Image 1 (tube, rainbow, N blue to C red):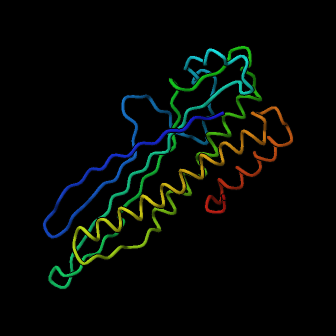
Image 2: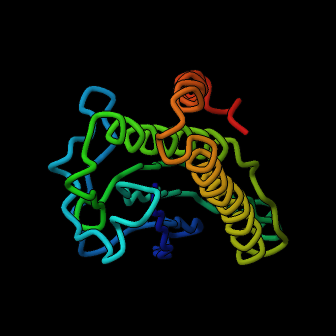
Length: 206
């Protein structure tokens, strides 16, 4: 099982004849563990308290993950300030888990369940990579005014991010449903193969 969170914060600074903006999706006040291909998750990272009905649930554990993104971009003028162009300068996207909100039923903490939770994290990484690619590919946005160019680029970035974040939530739920929370071994193996392929080519993920 997975739980998923995302929050948006907007910060901006103004420069002479050019405006630079930073768009951030961030979590505040919690410890986060970055996804690392060389460091798999372990049960000691599942530090949250299981729900009171956890022993009666199908799922034995839940990993809480966050995709955070940061886009810096600039808006410059031309033709004596009669037209403006907003362009993406840099993109940063992270995929983290939050130990305090991740939990496991101690009596069900076996390797099969842990692998299932790791694949949740890996699937999140697929969409972190896909989001990074798509945001970097966001077209420059023109406007008759500085604000119009800002608004166009802001909307384009948010539309792309919202679509990818909605899709990863959908795919995480589908993964749980088809693997029956790790108890369907053949489906678990199929998803492991799919996720491995998508990690190599994230834009091919649905």
